[in-house]
Image 1 (tube, rainbow, N blue to C red):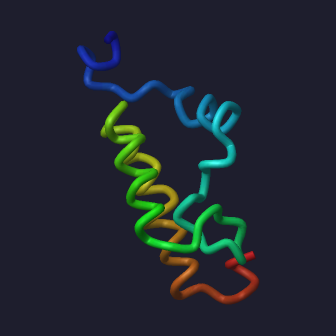
Image 2: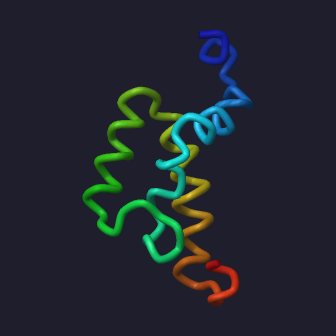
Length: 82
């Protein structure tokens, strides 16, 4: 509630998620690069479930693992992808 009122994002949210839900990090990546799923529907369902709890957290994950990392998956060299 404090972060909601202040309009801020809790700095330990991602590290806490990493500790407690590490199997969901990188769920948008293909399995061959360490991802968890290989289809868009499952990725969307995971995103919807996270967003139902906190939409801003889902957005943060998608920016980091969707926009940033997905650019490397699509356009990077094989070395960058690993």
